[in-house]
Structures are given as C-alpha cells and as structure tokens.
Length: 165
Image (cartoon, rainbow, N blue to C red; front, top):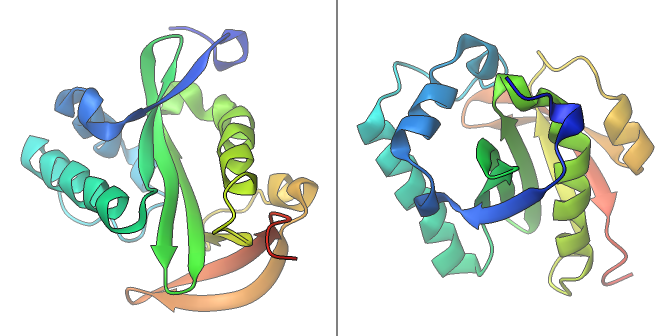
C-alpha cells in the first residue's frame, strides 16, 4: 500500500473518469462514512452512479464542482466546490490509505478558488465528529457558528480568497 507522504503527483479529474467500484469501495468504508452524517444506508454502484450524476450536474449549473483526485494515477478520493446559497462550499473525502494528502489537495483546490473571481470566500462545513481543526486555523479559516444542513448540525468555517475584497 503506497504511503500518502511519498506521493509525487496529484491530479484532479472529473468523477466520471474513475471506476464506480472505486467510489463504491471508498463510500462503503466505515472509516470514511464515520464523518459523513448525511451518508445513510448502504452504498452500491447504483448509488455511486447517482452521486456522480448529481456532482456532474453542479458543473453544468455552476461551472465548477467536484473532482476525483488521483495520487500517482490511483484514486485517492473526491471533493471540490459546490454552490450552497451564496457560498462556495469546499468538501474533501479521501480514501483511508490517502488521509495524509488532505493538505496538499486542499492547497491545490484553494489555488483554483483564489484564481476564480466568482469566489470571494470558501466555506467548510464540518460535522461535530471532526475534532482536528488545526489545519483550518493554519489556512486562516474563521469559525462562523453551527448551522443546520439537511437536518444535521455542522460547524461552519470561512476562508477569504482575496477575490472581491
């Protein structure tokens, strides 16, 4: 199993470019769903296909969305930006053997947000189960409070991108 710290190359590709089985395996792993309160029930290839279709629809609607992340050519997880009201929310869900890549992937994604004049800030919605928040502090994200999203509580953080200041 390759180490996340030895990964040399991170690529962002569209979700339809990865095998549904890879997404299904990731989203069926209890270590992944432990921090995803909106992921309920079992996950199969049909759920993966519906998920990919929904995420691709955000690209059509908003011109930006979620990617699959490849680490040295291998599926490492998914995430990206989704318009939530006036906010551009960033999410990241990594495969357990790639948890250590979050900082690198987020840095690349935030560079995209900082270059996009439509994105004055990025929000992060974290479930209460997420206890390690120092990375958000290092980024400069500020806590805005607890919000309800689809019936679940999330802690909301915001990071200014420098656009629209």
